[in-house]
Length: 151
Image (cartoon, rainbow, N blue to C red; front, side):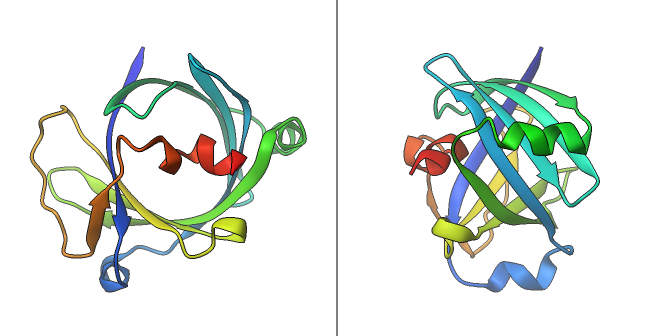
């Protein structure tokens, strides 16, 4: 079983952009989102797609299962979604010790929202906090992608 340990923050300013790798476009939607788990389909660029099942909640650690799917199948699954398709561009920034910040710049109805996430090996793992990090929203369910899709 996969476990994801992730911290999530709002981003303030544009200081992160100087260190970012080129962005990749993402379209994603939720096929199901309930009290136990969510099922998401995601298309990255034009050539990769994944189906993801995550345990529900805005916890630091959550179960996560990911599977590659054909892009054509993922595109068809988008029509089965609950709520809106989330459109964003993801940028990566090295964070040392094999870690990376993922910066999501949202488009569409969420234009202007920028969120940084970092995956950790343990809930209490220390990490450097760049000066462009704003408020932590890890435990705020309003900033989960599933909630954003339904907003």
